[in-house]
Image (cartoon, rainbow, N blue to C red; front, top):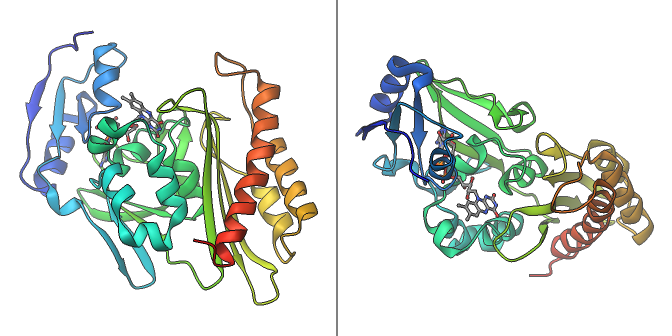
Length: 291
Ligand SMILES: Cc1cc2nc3c(=O)[nH]c(=O)nc-3n(C[C@H](O)[C@H](O)[C@H](O)COP(=O)(O)OP(=O)(O)OC[C@H]3O[C@@H](n4cnc5c(N)ncnc54)[C@H](O)[C@@H]3O)c2cc1C
């Protein structure tokens, strides 16, 4: 449980951090909260020769609303998302998600940027960001670029970030009137990774018809998944029990679970179906004004 030796760097600016990443190449890793990277190093699943600790870049810690977006700095801790008024009042699905990640000790250190950059399909934020149609801002030697969340997760523990890029910000379109969302996670015990998780986001028009649907799935595929067919099915329809049940069935079909110590593939698929139904019902109730 002792990591390999490494050289520690503590840059004072984003430019300095990117310059270090560019010069050190594949031998270097960014260190944020360390809640995934340090365990991997202790298990010798990761053996970077250089750690670039970005915890000094405190201007990457923020939660702001501007120009029709919620923007979250990459170094924002789970505990800050959990406590944020704006997240609690307007982005309940993000609040739900942060609240069920690990335990309070981990949440005090773990960052939203690290949660996404790690590219682990078992992590909880990716499904929520898929449902919300977020954008990822990655900053490298040529400045920032924006990556749509659908293009971000490439494979297990692999993202669209270049080796010399730092994930600096998440951009989430502000919800319009009649929007609601929910994240539900099935876990063996509190603090564990998900057996399966579902993020659901909906917008309803004045007649109760669904004008936007987002459904993201956790830990039931090689990457976080979007249940695209279920989203399309719900569009333009009222969120009746029957339509929600069909959406749940389609989300179960879209999942690609494998059997492991958390359950059989069949069980997980059935849980995706049921949790999608429950998440859609909760999202609908919130869209209709339930706090
Ligand atoms: C006991 C325990 C339980 C856990 N349970 C859960 C859980 O229930 N749900 C869940 O989602 N996660 C869980 N995790 C995993 C962990 O909380 C997340 O992966 C965490 O949010 C990672 O963020 P971090 O800031 O700690 O990242 P780090 O560990 O610092 O980094 C993770 C990876 O991302 C890269 N990275 C980090 N920040 C950036 C950046 N800004 N730009 C580019 N690359 C970057 C690092 O180089 C590394 O490869 C758990 C971890 C532990 C230890």
